[in-house]
Length: 298
Image (tube, rainbow, N blue to C red; front, side, top):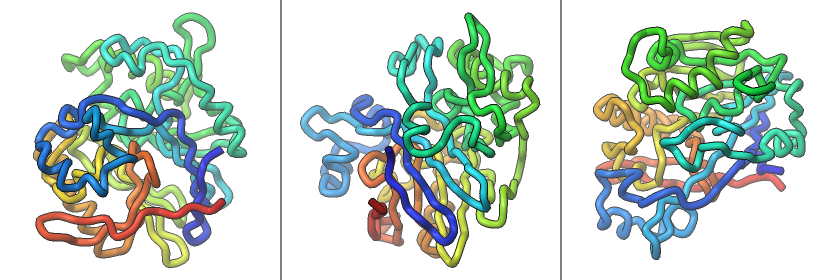
């Protein structure tokens, strides 16, 4: 049913769609050599790195925030029945994610806000559900979907960019139907959701990548999307994942966000960390270090 944390007046529920090994560790973070993984083995294994097979361990998960009387979803995973032939793990998936949300107390009609931190396939998939062959409709009929305008422009096939077929498909099945239904807000710069939550642009991983900051009752968190794929990037923030589109920009943004999190005692919540899923950070030699992992309510 998911773990929960309460920060100030905001409840955070973690709903995990999938967790496991995904691929070779140094394919996911190419610049991090084996010596870095071995040096951080105590931090990485067993929740983030399977040492014997040298596999990166990750998660597909959504964070449910109950804030100001509204229900907010942060990212929506891969979705069912998608054509993603170049991404076998995402191709024609069939999971009971909506059932998992319901078990956590969130029916689709209860969702008020959907935040897509960026528009990669594993962050927008459950934006929609199939309604007959080739027909997709918003999965959350009463929700406003907050999408970065820069990513919308970047992935929109109408803008003439040379996109991968899977990127065209994700736009057509998970983004365009929400826009056509009049449920999308394309924002840029900064977008305040309520008194506790604000979205901020954090480009690099994609042109429109964003972070969601929470501030309530003196407690703080930052949902960082794909700025981090592995804890190895905490100690070595200059190292990008293989999915970052602007390597220089992604590294600069990661450094900036981690520095603020350390200075302002924000709980850092990446999209794909398994195990505890979130952590507090402190400054360390040449980078940062985990001060402590999140602890959940029963």
